[in-house]
Length: 112
Image (cartoon, rainbow, N blue to C red; front, top):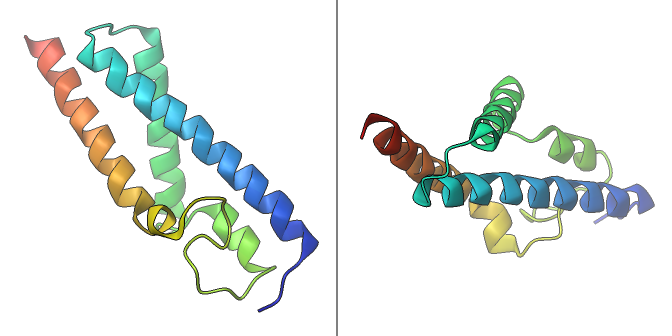
């Protein structure tokens, strides 16, 4: 397996983006559970929609992963991010489920 110094920078950037989206997703979940529907909820939904659009355009592959692939031939799911391999593997499924739960609660709050 090759290792390139740029891969470390890419992993840091990818992890920072992942952390940012954790804040976005968990704020959304908190806000709908606490019934604090404010402008930030709509900003969070917009950011999540943007991420979804990017993944759609790149055929469900993060563009950072594509960038990192230039510097690694690793088969591991976490080759491009500082996460445990199991979390990198199931990341999209886990966070999609959390977002869907938040959206269901949001719909309930808006229609109740």
